[in-house]
Length: 263
Image (cartoon, rainbow, N blue to C red):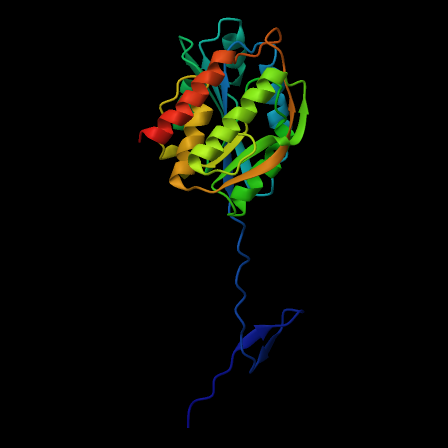
């Protein structure tokens, strides 16, 4: 005869009852934690940078996601560098200064080296793009639906975009789709979000505004999934501080062609 086995379990009043099997209670599995690294390449944005940082700090991200802000000063000479000093000792913020103005692409590549998150987002240092779009920009990556997310101005709301810029954006998007078999609507958007491992394994070379076509070409060529979400965009003029020029569009087109023809 096998020996009888009994177990004691606690009742609601703390007493035990013999002869009932004990059902182990497994602790609830906590949701996975994520860190969003926000890289901000900055050149002569003394009038905007404090507002941008404040807007980013005020954004509420999905549960389980914390943010770090990486401010890369690309040789500013308008007082931006001095303004950034007050952020050096702020928790989850990194400030890097370069002595010379190397360009947006270089600043982004510097920021990537500092990023510790598993998701990386590029944010311009002006007010053309709205940080309130962050939750919907990162959600497809958090859900495992995308490796890369582009915030599409043409699926969302556009204000104050000059006709020349509109046309250049359309041409670059068409070129990216034709050359690399993409199905995107906004190749040149500044709001690009990546799984960190995807971005960090790319051997990026861009120094200026050719970062966008280079990374688009390499993402599409590698077969990564790109998901687009609509965003809000309010363009500014050269007088208001816009840095990109007509020849940057020409360089962007040549960059797409170069990465299509040469590996």
